[in-house]
Structure formats: C-alpha cells, structure tokens
Image (cartoon, rainbow, N blue to C red):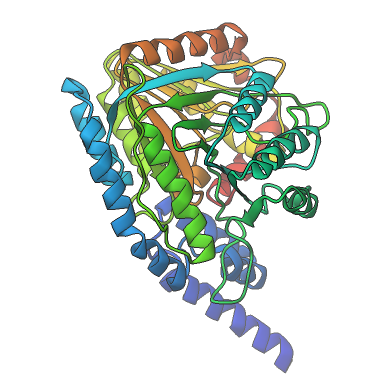
Length: 466
C-alpha cells in the first residue's frame, strides 16, 4: 500500500503530465512539442524543471518591448536603403518575402568579396580596423582571449587611441571558455564590451539556449563582414580545425548590417540609437540583401525563405552546413524537389565536434538517400561554413545552420546574393566542397551497426531540443 509520500509523488507526476498536455503544444512546432511531451511523460519532475528553464521559445516582455521601440529606427534604415533598390526581375518575389521577414530591402551597387581562408579573414579584418576613422562595431558569437582574439583586440586598442569608437558584443554562452578573459582583454584596450543575451533573473529570465549567433562586423559604416567565422583560433577544439566562408562587403547593404548591430547593442543596453544610419554609396555591381532572423521576429525568417525556395527550385539545391537537423517542412520540400527532377546536394562535415548532434543529423540520412538526395561528408576539416545555392537565382551565406536551433531559437543573420557574379563565386566554392568530400553510398550506409542505428534514433527523439 502506498504511503503518503509515494501517493503525493504519484499524483504530482500525473498532474505534471496532464498539465504538459495542456501547455506544451501551445505556440510550438509539432516536433518540439512531441520531444517535450516525451521527456515529461517519462521523467515528469526533471522534464518539468528543464521545461521551466528552457521551454519557452519567447523572449520576456521587457525585451519584446525594447525590440518594438526600435521599429522606427529599422524603418528609417529600410527607407534609406530603398534609394539604392535593386532591380531583380524574376528574383523580386524572393526579395519581397525577405523584406517582409527581416525588414531590410535588397540593394544594388555592392561589392562582395568571398574569403574562405580562415587566417586571411583575420588579416583583412585587422587591416580594416587599422584603417578605421569613425567606429568599429563587432557582433560575434565567440570572441576568445587566445592569439586571434588578442590580435583583434590590439587592433581595436590602436583604433581607440586614434579616437575611433570601438564596440564589441559577444555571446557569453558561445564564449564561455574565454568570457572573463575576453571582457578584461577588451576593456584594457578601452573597448566598450557587452555580452549578448546574458543569463539573468532581473527583469525576467532569458533562456540559456536562446543565443545571439550572428557574426556581423562593421567598420565606419562602409565595410561589413558576414558569414560563419568567429574570432577564435581555427583549432580551438583539440584535433578539430575549422574551415569557414565569409563575405567582405562594401556598398549600401552595409547600412542594413550596421542597423542590426546597432539594434542588438540597443537591446542589451536599453539605449536607442542616437542617429540614423548613413547608407554608404554604391561601390560595385553586386545585388545583396541582409535577412536577420530570430525570436524577435514574427516568423522563422531563414527557414521560411529556405523551404519556399527549395519548393521553387528548378535545377539544383546545394546546402552546406555543419549541423543538419531539418523539420518536417524542409524534409518534405527536399523530397518533393528530387521528385521534380531537382538535384539536391547536402554537404556536412565528416569531422565530428558535437557527438549528439551528429547522431541526430545522421538519423535523417536513410530517408534522404532513399528519396534521392546526395549527401557529402567533407574530409579533414570541420566545415563550419553555412551557405545555400538555389539554381543560378540565389545564394545565401551567413551564420544560420540548417537546424531547428537556428530556425527557431538563435538570433541569426544571412546575406542573400542575387547577381550572377556573386552566385557563381558561391557555386564554385560549393563545387570545391563536394570534390573534397566522400559521397554517402546508400547501400553502405544501411550496413551500419544496430547499435549505431539505436543511438541515432534516440538522438533524433530529442532533435528539437538540441
């Protein structure tokens, strides 16, 4: 017979389970709801505690109010950018949707230089900081106090001595290994340094797993960097060397990049931008658009655009990402694209840095291979680059992975490229990735061990929580 403690515990577990059925499915994608319900039904009390900590994919009310207060600033930036509006012809619907999702219009008159050599990005950035005359604003997921971080910080210190305004914002979870050292390093150089989305209880909590994953670097409002590279040594993980892709951009689209960086600074400080963005003059012929996405926005911007464009693809789709955990909408779009005769290639890294994520993404391979999707495992390096090519109409590069975390939780920034020259550059780099990869053979893949399959399936159950 149950004693009073056992009876109370038994009743509490069932109250938690029934309550979860009422609360968890609200405003969540089915895959996320299923994962949370499964966890809470098996482990009611631990599942409830975890749900309380990270279960709400929304920012607190005070932050949502701050974001709304930035609307006039973003609208004024968009209006200024339209002076340089791009004539996109058949690509106009893409740009229109991206504008509705992220608020920033497509512009003409840009120059885009793609850099896929890790050290070359740091060299170029330091040179640009050394040439800065007005300000340097850096927004990055990881800023380490290692040799790379010290080199960038030294350049920022030299800029500060010249009277240049220097600001750095980094994510404290992404930079947790170096956080205190990085703050000390930057402040010793006279740099204004802040943490993005710090964990706090004052004014309402923020989820530890809702992160600012953007990598946007702006110098003097006329030079911008967007892509996947953090400010950390390329081999900061033992035995793993990162390979990246970054766009160094000049021209009007840098105005959109500056607006997002200033906006994120304002969200953390509560200080509204004191001056409107001065949109730089045209420097080239590239047509580009910045798509910010994240929990501040009404819809999942990057995912919405990506799924729609996969459905619109006529010839080819190439996705390059270190972490591939799709939802039902993207899986359906990929299968349908292959059925329509579209060649679909997914390039992921053969080098594993996150075991659980790798198991989860591998669980999707069998269905994708069966549908006719070609999967390529990049050899030798952790291919941390994140880019997409759709036919010869659109190329995307930025900070967003093709996974549920980037779709729903992280603050991300994607650079959309519409001109033939820029798209061809991305396509050439992607072909190099495929050439340096091992293509997964469906029959060989199906011969993997039962234990491996079991681990993949368990990891997949919790893919919405990774």
